[in-house]
Image (cartoon, rainbow, N blue to C red; front, side):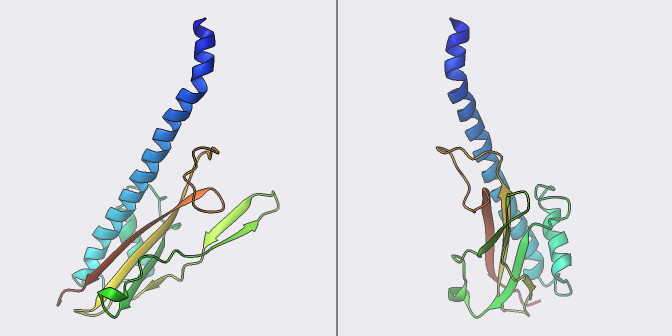
Length: 166
């Protein structure tokens, strides 16, 4: 009798456990990306990253991610741009995703983000945005965290600030 009850309840129980773990990992990754953008942006704000290029900034940002996005953060797309003022900040635009089907029939997607690194001069308003496509382990019909065509979750973090008078 116990084995039958376990058999009936095992699938819903383990599905709930999995859903909790998957949701936790997505939120953790989002928070880590947000914190990394915050900490790395401070170097731009204070003028310490004026001589950086996009690779240097990616390395700096990657140092704050605890290797959660890979050893070199090559999957993180970064934009650092000078904007006119705070009302010009573009925090709602989602980059487009281009997908192709490979020879194995698997959908492979990539973000169409033009990576730039323009840290701005003193007192200019700068917007720093980072995107990462978080891979999900399983997508169930009744529990699906993906928001991309290839069953990944797009994570984004943005900071808008005025550079200090360095």
